[in-house]
Length: 331
Image 1: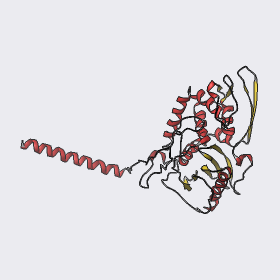
Image 2: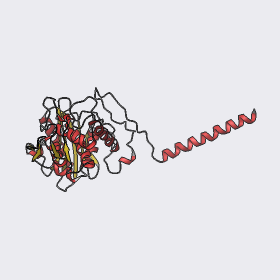
Image 3: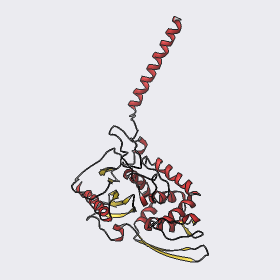
Image 4: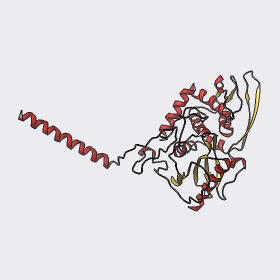
């Protein structure tokens, strides 16, 4: 019996040494707790990581990574909004950040993910054919008016998606790229996870309201930062207007003309002096409020990404965004 007890004691010591060594190795490798506090999306409470938390290392090399608010000149930003972010996309430095990790409804900012997947997996001259699912009955929803059997190229569809924010075109793209809406949504969520957008969950390709469809301003930065790696995306979001002709189900040609919903590109609003707005995406629903994401450059051609989510009005949205862009020259 004594021999068995000594052996058991020896095993315990060996296990203790191994566990201790493991902890030391993990600490030496910079291991941190990546857990993020979660809340119920119904109340849209904050999902901001605690100060001692960290983001997974693979995402840090090419991204701006931080864990809390970066507040400056709070009296300067007097507009009503829930979340705002301004990031130097070149140096990967946050200039301003308020509630960047709060889960909010993205409205049509969703469409930048739809465009990203279309560019990644589709071909510009690919012909898309509409199913009956392109019919959108939501009151006030932006659409082109395509019907079952209508067809257009992916190149045409992307411009109608990003400039006009057409919800029916979002469905057209999703079904033709992935085969079904469910499969496309799966791709959206997989891509979000790949990009480190852990506060995001998509249920559709257009952003029409769904309580389980949400994101954060920081996640929008992550997704948009990926989008601007593609020249086609940057070209489209910089266009002020677009005219095209697509084919109806009976073979007839249907002409459509749209303008960019981005007020800076349409000339309705103006950025601060020495700041050039390259383009972006708007989003508005009753639940999401007024949202906008921008890609801009300063006089030295340095790139910036800015996001405002859930502004209470169009005036507050562009007023807040203009003030954010004004911070670029205050650095």
